[in-house]
Length: 324
Image (tube, rainbow, N blue to C red; front, side, top):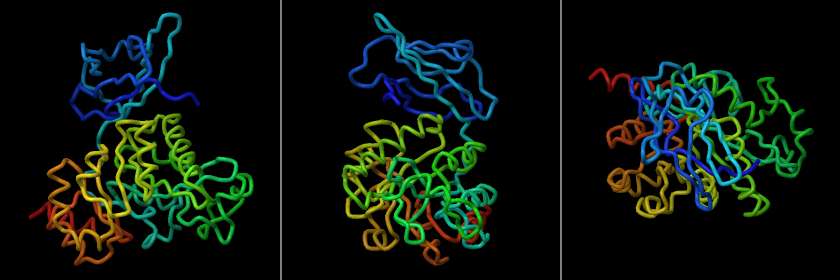
């Protein structure tokens, strides 16, 4: 897949709004951006290339075709713009909603349960097979079979405890794209083999998200800072957050990250980072928070997101806060 030459600053639109975001020509690309196809009848580009709907959009999502007119050719891309009805309760189901549902963690069933519960996001982990196919699983191995050292044909035969086959990222994305309430929180796992392979994994992930026009649904997280930098190189306005916990908010803001996503213990040790992050325009997430008392501690400090194996408990707490 050829690298995109144009991108958007935003892939969602607010209900009732007509402005989407700016169309950005990536470095090294020259030419005039124009609208093509049916989208040319529904949208317009203003003088600074802001994409604007001619009337408020009613559909859950709509495809926009943008092209760059160059001297001897025209290169076009299709982008899916999704209505921003994503839930704002801050509840992120860790590896999907599995603990209280009977689903296997990181299964498509766990994702579906998280969506049905009404979680703001469902987190999941991605690895790459020896022949560069992307699979969803937490550990580097499945019952002793190392994902990175095994071809996709063999991995596809592996069954999870709930009877599902080991899901590919493609299948996971296609399930998540059937709705626009729950964000897909995609964790790119550092390679156990090499840093170079981690970079290749990041590239494959972003390309697959772009291929399925899923940018409006997907946020990225990783323990590998260089992986997040690679994501931003390929998709400059993607929402990415760092997991490892050793970097102060100012460093993340300098590198244009969306937020920090740190272990609860890190934030307890550095509670001032929560206010500092917010002052710098960063979001704050904490993982993996299963204690009701610690949920309360984070809610009192206005953490934007809380990642938990107990989404049912956290959803109830958020609901009660809203009724006070």
